[in-house]
Image 1 (cartoon, rainbow, N blue to C red):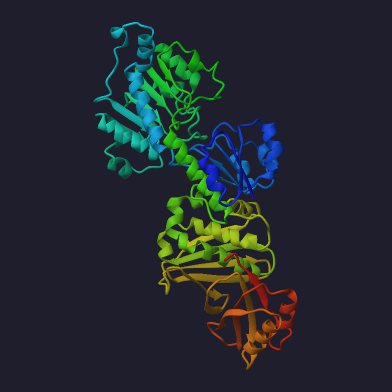
Image 2: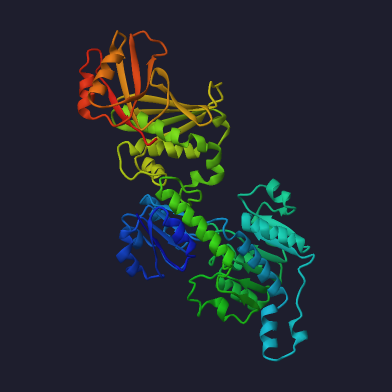
Length: 530
């Protein structure tokens, strides 16, 4: 496997990745040049300079994961990557402190005219009265976006004696108030309150030009604005006008639309009072090392067959969702695989039921794992990224039910696949931590550990059936590692099933030999990812 690292990323990333793959550390390159070589690589790691466009993604025929050493991923075509089943990861926490500190630094430097005073003094001038500033003490700070960066800014601002107001539709009032800040439920109420406003949100359809001519005019006259988040959240031409009219007294901006080509940017050309820095929010030695290590570790994990902890295009696998159900993920995937390989016909719907402690949890990661198991049984290159998209494109009816019915296990998962020919049911459970079991296959109650190679052998209840199957397997050099013989819950038809774990794959010829045994007609080999 090969990994391309570009955009002057800390060399520690290369050392981490080289534990599992060959890594090339190359300078930033234009799109056409990148397209010529990207087909050789299984992974790509970038900062903000490289644009991972649709063209690059089409050329990256072997790409499995793209890592952005930073918070944002706006330089990556995430939608196209998702369609191609490429995982996109970032480092949401690696530069938290750096970005928060830069926000506070800009707010103070703007308020006290630090940059202008420094430039004047370096010219040998002494213009104290010209640079009289403003204190932040007892002023109000409005924060839009209360994630890790926004919440840390709130703590520092409060330490400076500021009153903090927060708008974030994805954060509860209780969380905001735990930080000692005041929760504002709507932007209509928010705009007119703060003396200072800072934004800490990603750039999305909802946040693009969030601060515009209309919203600026609803703010206090003389408001001061800070943006260390993303260019395009503030409408730059509108901010230029507001600075020059005095509606906005001062602004401090670290991020721009169209960066790094900002020579004609309205904020560069304005005559208003503005402090500008060239996207330095994450530019500390500590932050650059943190994000490089974080993303490199995720790439290493994915290339080793594991999962990424900060995949931006697998929302169901965000750490806060994944951790409570992590112990069930492989079991869920195996249930999907077993059910699909035991089914026949064209798949129409997937019904998932969870029980026990799972009924109180967000089980969306398990849904994704089940879909991956189902589709990987008959398709190639299925992963956690594209499995939900495949289900959507196929028009499948996928439902999940949380049952409060008492359960004999810590937690259980049941999958029912409906095809145009039949229904197939498989259930799995944890009988103890780290002890997954398949506990139901259609009408049969069982208890066997899911393993890579399994046989399902329905048979008539008569003497020597197990011995005859074992003889065929042994004669073909196939070892039996575990076996469970299960009867139907209501065994009225004198039929049982052997569920056999084998040490190796079972070929078609061996299956034919087993099916030739009198009393056996539908033996199936099941291959799981376990």
